[in-house]
Figure 1: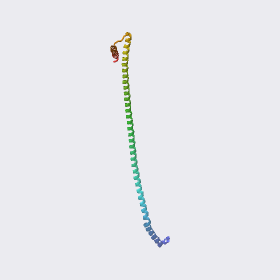
Figure 2: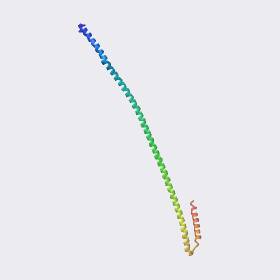
Figure 3: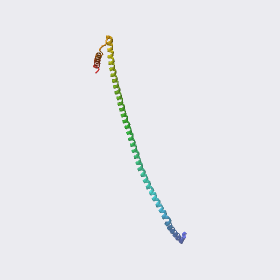
Figure 4: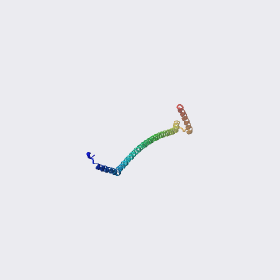
Length: 169
């Protein structure tokens, strides 16, 4: 081997040095580097699992939030519907109340008109009777029995009322 340029004692010394260096590196460098690489790969794996869990939790949270938003929308719509119904009921009640008040007012006005008409007719009867008696006194130029003439005028007026109200009814 010397012809090839190898020196066997040097080669053995190099080989021993390489094995010692390999043992030292294995003991002090290779094992700690492997431990560090294993620890790093474990941290990466845990981080990936944590990211997956966080993504799943985010999806679950997003779903829950969407459900809450949809529920809030439903409740809001329900409240709006209830408010509309209440407003419609209130409007109807107010319309009924206003109609009733208007009808009551019309009824009161009619009864007031009827009462005033009856009072006016009674007053006209009284005045007519007095006028008729006074006119008769002047025509005859003497005093007539006032009571008898009032009864006569009342009887004539009643007959006139009976005749005038007969064809209407």
